[in-house]
Length: 357
Ligand SMILES: [Fe+2]
Image 1 (tube, rainbow, N blue to C red):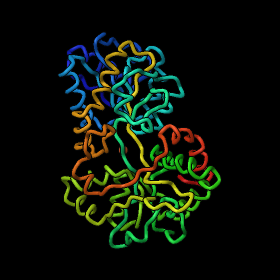
Image 2: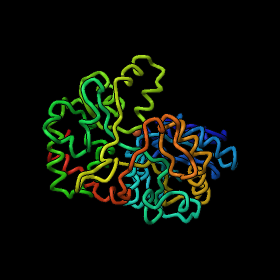
Image 3: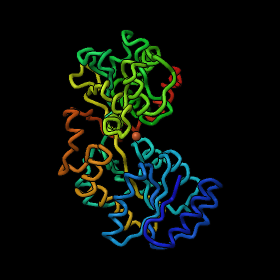
Image 4: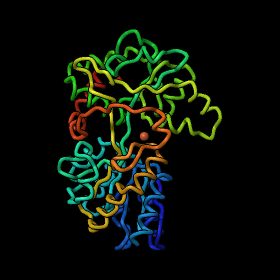
């Protein structure tokens, strides 16, 4: 966790206090003396990817930003424990589940912005405009090209079939990406069918050792498993890696967009998730906070995001990066993000019951 002072010397003080608060108690954060004019952004985005965009925003508007980076769930917990004294003005999450949690706990507020509602498609934002998708990603199948032919692949549902026994690696069920996928399964199939699917998946696992999405794709590249499911931008990162051995592993891996020709009842396209932005309920800087979210969906900012983090832009005027384009076009599941978020609790229960570690 770190807090980067971006513009103003006073943010150094805030940075120091918040840094201490991060490792001590939440109460220390309440005591932080922040500059009245500093917008405090709690962000789960990779720091080197979000900071240039925030710098640009400060440059354009003169609004100073203090950035606190951590995992989405920890940031939500932190805002909750800091209560009304929180210094946070904006929350940026890496997935929709944590935006929903923040919303359920009353930590974020609805905002009125024609720019946001016009730019971000309805399916990619909260119906009450409490959170907005800022970047789209797909969670797709990766396969070892020596072990699997793309013709053998079809859908997420099919990965639970026993012919994949001992050949599959999956992200842990404590991970929000897995929970989102499980939630959309529940939204499509209901809880009972999803339970059977989760049990099939667990029975097919090559190993219970997982790791992050990057580790999964690398393991498939190394032949430790034949197939896995991960977010597309991790594959892009591996292909662009400065490390020769990583690029070599990536060259063994193929990307497959599942559920493009779904059988009856199957999910209707590749699973889509969003990174999100939201305004904290207790902010005293709502205008500036909304201006930041508007900037993050602007063409300039979206182009930067598409090219640097390899996410699909939410702004329809911005094209996807050449590398994402090379992965091919695909049909995304049409289910609304808010519907996926609805089944978060059931998803965790299903995974637990299935013994999905
Ligand atoms: Fe990620």
